[in-house]
Length: 283
Image (tube, rainbow, N blue to C red):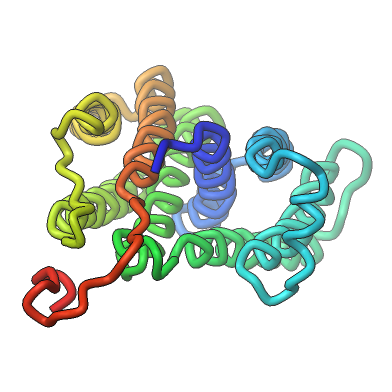
């Protein structure tokens, strides 16, 4: 399957902005950061809007967008419906302190709702890709990759926000980011191994002709640069350009990873009739 560029961009925007919102809340609640959530929410909803434009452009005609809503139980419909409470929460939180001042308790309730809605949106989006016709996607690695890269990307975003807000990145948040990054990278590497052994003549080698460029770029921007950045961050906890570079690098890597994900999603036109024809991955 060819990489769907609009969806690669929208995926990058969704995971980074929603992930940053979620992990910024964790940074404030758990690590005592003072990240201004109204600013995070405003920036997030702008980036999320850009991402949704990518989704709309992928669907093409408006009729296709409306047609997707005809089945309210489909994952695509749930994705669109889940986006509504996300947008409402982000807008109300973003306007707090600018247009009005809400009680702290009300803000906390909205933040919790926004967190739950953001996680639900990413989860439903991940499930929309689990298609039996595309065996490389129809496995546990698809939702795990979506969720872990969502949290890992958000951790990088919250580190950058914490440095800007507090002047330095807390060690606890740094360690959490490392754990999430390692978990996300491990899951991506497992997915890489899996798609190289799917069978049905639709195996995808990460350094094959069709994926070498995308996969190599992902390794550099999504693995090498973050490792160097995180290793250096403990010595430069107050150097915001370092965290900005790592955040942007990881964000670009998410688009590259999604491109590799699309290439791996080759459709099976016929299934084997005999047990001996089954791939070890499915046998």
